[in-house]
Length: 152
Image (cartoon, rainbow, N blue to C red; front, side):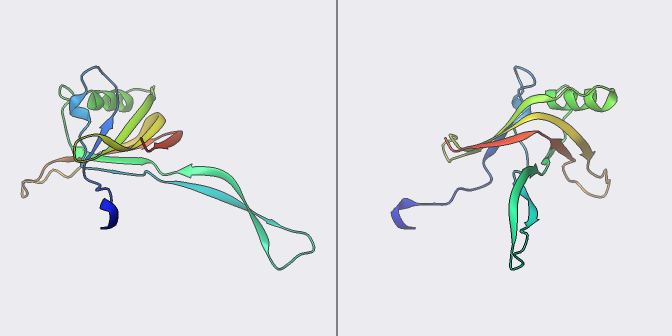
């Protein structure tokens, strides 16, 4: 490619929850989706002019973050303990931030997404199947208020 430009790869990333001082087991995920935002519009008809309509921006909508990984026990993962606490009680305490970093080949951040006021929508455990020798995958769906993007 010209001038040494290479597109960024999508497989070297980390997710930080900051739930405990040692949450090193909670940074590795198989996949992350939902890093998207959409601006909704409102259609306004102009009186007397029928050739076009105005589309005005109204609000931003966001997809939930969907994270997948091999399941960990609560003794291995502060995130698993947080999920157990959320789904077994009537009170859900949102996490202030969840940080997702796309890394370069030396492990330095290339792109960073920060989700704020994050809480779980669903926590799904994959199929238990004695006929297959696969890793048991958990899928975590997270709601958040705002998603900011940074290119350090």
